[in-house]
Length: 102
Image (cartoon, rainbow, N blue to C red; front, side, top):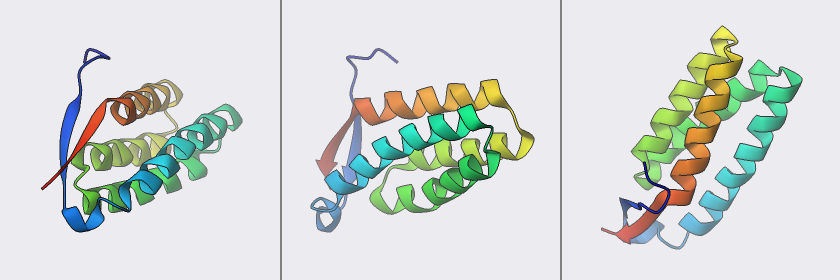
């Protein structure tokens, strides 16, 4: 994905006011994931991935939910390099989304 490309995401109008705070917390999750990875805390990574998998779909962020599932799975296997790639994918996704009311 080109960094200049935007990924349009349709979000229910009722959730639009909640989305900025939700996305800010996901940026904080990226920092936490990086710290967990550096510390070898796979349970921390798995926990963040599990929560992300569950709550991102509520906002229509299905790709982010998939990223959560990938994190959860890679953490269970202790796959450092894969986790690092997934965290990078999450960062890129969060930078690229353009939210549109549905």
